Image 1 (cartoon, helix red, strand yellow):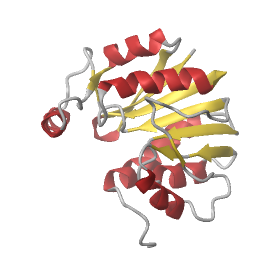
Image 2 (cartoon, one colour):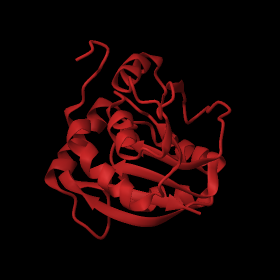
Image 3 (cartoon, helix red, strand yellow):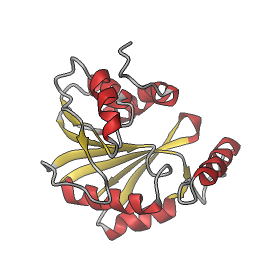
Image 4 (cartoon, one colour):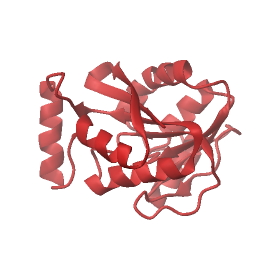
Length: 197
């Protein structure tokens, strides 16, 4: 393995399930912006399974770029990573047919969720989708003990981190003209949420 590649066991485990969900919900081709690409494992694995899609990875931290690029060597459908902070996003070459963001909402200040919704509303095609993935809190379903422990750990590490309630995320999305279109239960007590106009 190339030394530049960072490795997330969780990303490796969940990528096949996320890919299957995306394949069922996205058309054969399009342009996708990935927010908070992290290690780059999702950009590599998901883009291979969606060969008709042009994939634009991004991350707030430039230190992530080498890992993203290393994972995506030999994948012409994946562009070079760009720096993107959802609180102060740069001009982007939109529109995009999809925006994808995994595991950022709970490991970032709450303001970043609003920033993500604002960014998606700005760069998505009118029929485009925002797809978020991760653990959430819900009124309709009890929170798994593992997610409660994860939430406590996140809040101990940073006072403005933690699992978000879908109701609160939905309110922020609606303020930007987006609404929750589909809730997909995923392994390990995660959810894939599909947002659109």
